[in-house]
Image 1: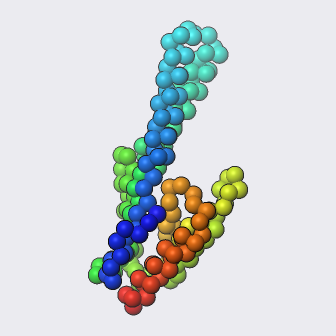
Image 2 (image 1 turned 135 degrees about the vertical axis):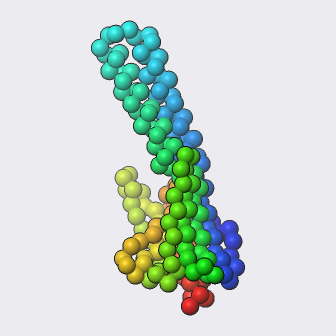
Image 3 (image 1 turned 180 degrees about the horizontal axis):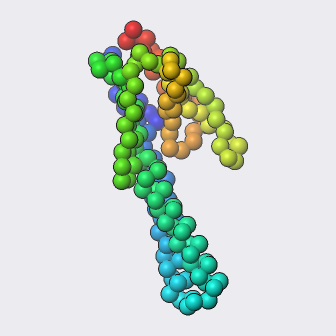
Length: 163
């Protein structure tokens, strides 16, 4: 995630994560091809049908995840003139936009998180007065706390200038 535009009235951050989409699509397509080849070459032997079905299901699920659940582009826009923060996530086959008022942001904090293999990484959280949290993060987990502190400081300074 990096700051791509910063003016007194406008702050924009961008995170690009195309690598994960290609990896998921590649694995999904490979599983589908393996499953289809087992169906064609294995006849109706039960074990071949089980393997083929498992590969076809795995390939289908992995491909669907790549197309609908992995954002290839995320843009965070803080707009003082409109008084909003906009989170835009672009997926291969869909997009999602979340918009909140700047005045609803109660705090900007850097939080440490841990993934399934116990690796630590950092995210910037916008905590709203309602208790809702908007998470600003990269597609790939980033262990560089200083980078996120700098981004959080830029957001705080921008928000302070809008008051």
